[in-house]
Length: 162
Image 1 (spheres, rainbow, N blue to C red):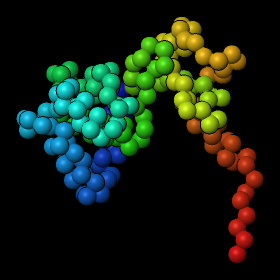
Image 2 (tube, rainbow, N blue to C red):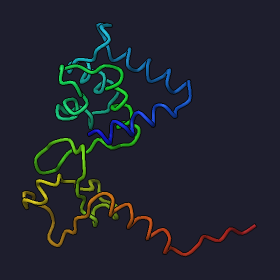
Image 3 (tube, helix red, strand yellow):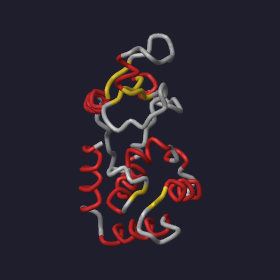
């Protein structure tokens, strides 16, 4: 989770002043009682209102809560904003926990038009604790990124006609 926190901080630090102001405004909107902390009910209510239900998951909230005080301060909340912008909030399809570190995806689902890309945590993959289609080939997310790059580089160049 520390890698995600560092990426979120770098992402936030490199945003425009307007976007930083919008993040603070969103934090205040989430903090219904104005105590400077986001409780789990405030977190869930805000995300449901924003129709961001993929993020309404207790394991995501717990992962965001770095100091385990059952609330999020602004520094913890910017990680949520980063996850929302990046689409990174993935849940293991087998054990239903937030994938805060390395994980595996079904490459066929990832590269096809599947609704789900079927991600699973390392423990479920290593322990063969999942059920997916026959012949599924799983790759970690770095390998999928490299495969995507290779596929793009192998594609014929697009010709622009003037």
